[in-house]
Image (cartoon, rainbow, N blue to C red; front, side, top):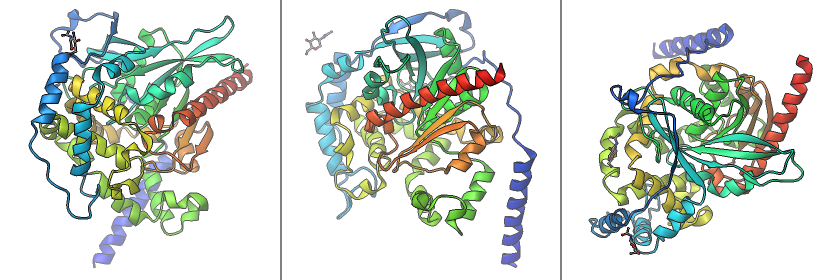
Length: 461
Ligand SMILES: *[C@@H]1O[C@H](CO)[C@@H](O)[C@H](O)[C@H]1NC(C)=O
Ligand SMILES: *[C@@H]1O[C@H](CO)[C@@H](O)[C@H](O)[C@H]1NC(C)=O
């Protein structure tokens, strides 16, 4: 009896997946460029000014952090033989908190963060913070804008090591890149919405408006983590504006891709080339890894405000919560290293810089809400991953990232997928971990996007 029910359920899923697949993509949703996310009453108070901004680690903030770090209650000792399997190892955490309170050079790091120009401007009721780096170019060289989008729990700082590489003026290229690096709404120094609904599709609109505010009618977009989803949506909504989309985290959540993924577990070569099969299979192992690592996601998608009370109130809690991800998401096997492998790829000061952004801006609460806005029925029912975009696309796939998607699945969304770079190194915080490879791949992608546009405009003539 049970078997009959199971088989009917599976047949039902298969039939509806096939039906959806052959029915074609859903329509693009209506796009409201003026949807208001700030307090309604004060609308007239806002203007379109672009105001210079500096990150400040004030003496009283620094004193407060040190005081909290020094007066915290003792941490729970880790269980015998346990590294990071139960979460951030408390022995390790002690060394991080001691470093933060006693050695972290606050004012040098404040200068480091302010070495580039920061601004804020109000878009749709949200104060949007961004870094803008414009190269000085000789006459005849075109400057092309590139929007760089971070995710959680990272920040605009993720791109800092790549900035000089991306904006370098090279005599072999007929263009140079200007960077616009925003803090996502609710992240870092950008304000969050005052009412529900600011999901990835709505953020895509805010960021399109940011680019228009800066005078950029056409531009390239790059993103990882939530930034990848938002960038992909920008490339879907604004196909005439986005000249090319580059991502280091290409995943697709469609019934079709999930069904194929499942089929591939019976015979992987159906779905993925043999040399990359271990990035997708065995499925059981991947699922159990997911279950072990995505508890935070379930909490943030359902009760973000509850957990925010604790992590927003304590620098120790915040550091543990954020830094844990930099360990496991860089390489799963770091869970069983006593030090979590944290300093294998990142310096202590740069990891604490990122925690400082969350602490100083008090944004952990609003940053976590993004999960609740995206992981819900409204957002999924838009089916945005099923709407193809003609924007030329370039994808880089670090070996140790959280998910792998084979090319032919990706092509259903990105028919003009010009390049895929498959790496044997790298994890989720890719721009921070391997800025050279990151920057080089983007610059090569922009060259191919430019060639693609030249070819295609010829065809249109
Ligand atoms: C902050 O502290 C530093 C070093 O203790 C001191 O030199 C500086 O004057 C202080 N700044 C303010 C605004 O109090
Ligand atoms: C987030 O928490 C901080 C305190 O940590 C608070 O100052 C801020 O107002 C909160 N944000 C919102 C939108 O309530």
